Length: 430
Image 1 (cartoon, one colour):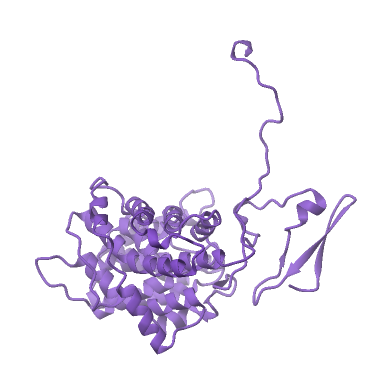
Image 2 (cartoon, rainbow, N blue to C red):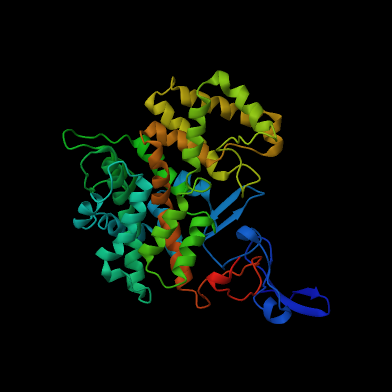
């Protein structure tokens, strides 16, 4: 809090509003008392100019292309650390010591199995159900299987629920994938790392051994790190809003998954790959580039630019490197979609129009290509996003629950409907 205040004047009414400062980033005007002092609300569709909470977890500077988790740049975490270390950082506020990391990895690893009755829960879905629909239902159902970690007032139960969510989400996602393609479920293994275990559960089959490629496992781990948290985005805000009512953490994360499913949010990497499919071949790229530049054409290049980042998406730099490592490791050179993607990347990084508009390839562009190369169908892309983002959701939920100033979310509105009117009996209506 600063000693300064903002003056609000409406006619003869004046309001003194406190000015608050964070560690970094712009100051905010605290409008909590605005209605009480002046009788008016603020109007901010999409909350693009409104701080909905106070948080110590993640900071984004879109103009500078900066993403920090607890103060650490995302590129340092992705290049030097691993996903579970990032999970510990988001949940507890500091990077773990060697002993703390060993203990955390041990506890997460030994929570990866799900209740055996969950396998029968999956059979209630149609075989062609979208994996995200399965995820929403399955994660929401966890509260029916784990009653001992739903009391949000108990710090121990909050910790257990946090570990369970991080540990079990890859298993639930892998089961959704296996059910989607008609293969038997593969149980988790305690001798594998988090990313290795996920790849094994997705791609191993009972009839032959599965060799885990360390380059692909590292790529999967980086994808998880790069998507772990992203401040107060739509799904995170959904988790916080659901949690503000006192809902259990499994229900809150299920709500976040439902929000993430939207093509404007978690479905962006799937939309980017669908766009590449629509373009089809390199010789059609000029046609689509021209359409993208035409203000009267509704077509938009998916996977380029970002609502928050007005500079290069810091996650995209790491994802670009990872993408090319995966393509080189797999020897993929003649895939038509990847040829289209690489040509689009070249144009976007060199064309004056894209540079001027700052329409750089974003993390969704590269992650979509990488996930396709790893062997995942597009229907699974948002599921993998949900696996990675779970720790961010849980960290944000946990922070909100432990905030003594936390209140149930209740946005206001600008009502533009009918004014007060009297009911007319049906036989008197013309």
